[in-house]
Amino acid sequence: MSAELNQGDPPALIALDWGTSSLRAYAMGADGAVLATRRSEHGVMHLPTGPNVHSPADAFELALQLLCGDWLAAHPQATLIACGMVGSAQGWREAPYRPLPSREADLADAVTLIERPGGQALHVVPGLLQAGELPNVMRGEETQIMGVLQSWSDEGRAPSRLLVGLPGTHTKWAWVEDGAVTRFETFMTGEVYAALSQHTILGRTMVLGGEHDEPAFARGLRVARSPLGVLGVLSTVFSVRTLGLTHQLTGGAQSDYLSGLLIGHEVAALAPALQDGTEVVLCGEPVLCMRYASALEAQGLPTPEIRSGVTPLGLWRIAQAAELV
Image (tube, rainbow, N blue to C red; front, side, top):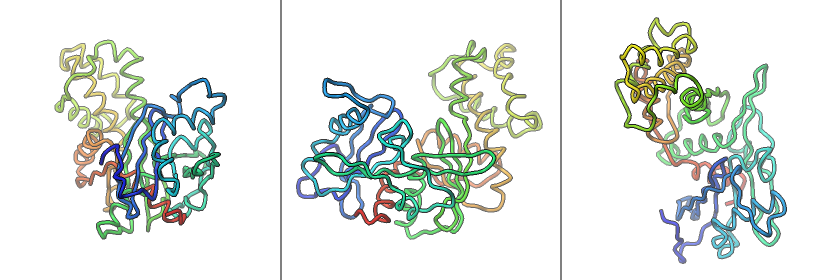
């Protein structure tokens, strides 16, 4: 993939992954292949400014033009679709959540249309809502899940039951049955790690930014799944400090130990639901996915598959279901 398009291979779909901190654009051919990709820092919370920006809509339009305005102008026949925080209450226009269960056809039916004067309309994919006493939501991850399903379909695979783990700031675990998301859980593991390491006493003795300390990470996983961790993460997390004070963990090792503790407790909480042979796939940044894979293996569970870069596949799958391509 490159940033430039081959003039002899016009895109059928221009797909946007528009998150909080970044914007990615994919030019996709008539067969669903990614022909070119671009990225900018103009996420929903970092939109550009300028003399012609008088409203949030102007800022979104400018961000789009700065990243791929030449694609849009040169290929007016291409459909424009987006997922992520662009459809949130802080986005270009809110795309209401879809209830569960939900598959690509349900997402396609609920796409929100944003008319752009002088250009292609933007089709915004909705997020998912799990109603109940403790409601849960996702926005953007539903498209990654569809991308995982599409990647498996391209390989001739169609599992009847699948658990998709999406590690990140707010890690999602989604159960998929016969192609429909039926349930999901959210763990704020990434955000809690950042808060604990940067804004509590635990961070006072940490040295951040060094090389990954695998033994320290493994120690955290081991504590989380041992009798020492049975009371939960709040009963073990202070050991980050005490192991440092007793010279059992160096400052550089403490952050990886904390990471192992938090991820270990997360996976330990999920372990009973994973004992039924449900196939697990991790989707996201490969290094973080490898940490979660290690945590699953430490629980005695099978090594999961790891998939990355599937968002354009998910956008293609939803666009097909909506008959946009």
